[in-house]
Image 1 (cartoon, rainbow, N blue to C red):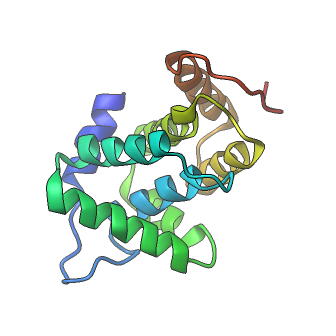
Image 2: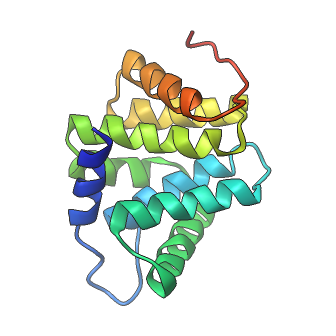
Image 3: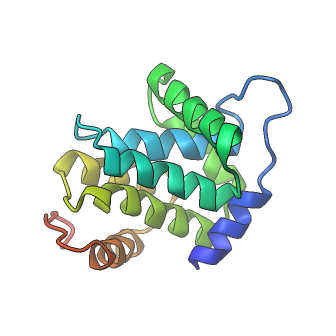
Length: 159
């Protein structure tokens, strides 16, 4: 499933204008991933590196193009009033499996530092609700991400 979402994300159209905007599904995805990374108020280097690695893998980009997408996601998140602008774009562009896989990517970012903070958990829950990912799929994606994160700690009310 992870390969399917990576393939899908690679195929999403890039913004046609010179400035990326929140209607661009790539920027929307980057903004949500950036948002969950900062949900606990602490951005650690390991989280930033995982964020950029997920973008690089998802879109087969590197260098200046990667830096531009990461910066666009950060800027979009910082300017956003809520998450709906981003989630509505992804809901239009991703099928059900793609939305589930995207939640898996969010959990990868959450567990990059080996810890689950309640604000990160809440953010993933809200995004999952907004894009139509069922509770059991969200919990399963979290379980998989936690299992792949050595030394991961934290629990949630979902279990």
